[in-house]
Amino acid sequence: MTTNGGNDELGTLYGIGVGPGDPELLTLKASRALQEVGVICFTQLDDGQESFALGVVRGVFEAAQPELIAITIPSDDDTPVSPETWSNAAEEIASRLREGRHVAFITEGDPMLYSECLQVLDSVKTVLPDLNIEVIPGVSSVMAAAGSSGKPLVTYGQRLTILPKVYGIDDLMEAITNSDTTVLMEVNDDLLQALADREKLGLVGTVTYVRQASTARENVVEDISQLSGEDLDYFSLLIIRR
Image (tube, rainbow, N blue to C red):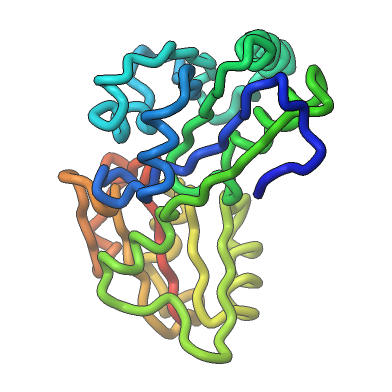
């Protein structure tokens, strides 16, 4: 996506998907853009761990030595990011764009699939309405996990549902009933235990757990009854095939 009618005096804001974790899955276009921008922006959890997206691409831009801007967000999923966090980040990014510098906001997976990228783009557009924007797609964790499992998500004519978070087993069962394949991108221990007893739920098919697809920590588990809450990982998902 590229906006039209932008301001030639401003730099361009790129929304770049860096993929699921393997640096070799970074697209050529994304790699080239990361070497050409002067500023790279990313979200950083407040637990002190390095940004996942930043870790994926460090080797690409190190020689260029761009300025790095971290947007610190809560590590607790139940704590929302404050509006001030986004507005402050937007002001920082806008100040660089006014100088004619190009800025890249990097995000794991794809910028248009459950990503903070849209929040960043909208916040900066509030400050700079004539903003120049280009979105560079990335390989999503959903596609990477399907590849790691060795099974297709769907084939011709089948239906796919992707859920970022499920609030109860009833919601999940409705999705499973209406889809040939359902992907859960956030899984809690209670839901995992419920799915382990598929016969009780009347679920006929397969459930595959994939942790950190494409990375050194990748793990594909077909028997989810063997998993516990300690096995769950933020960058993991379940693929449920009916």
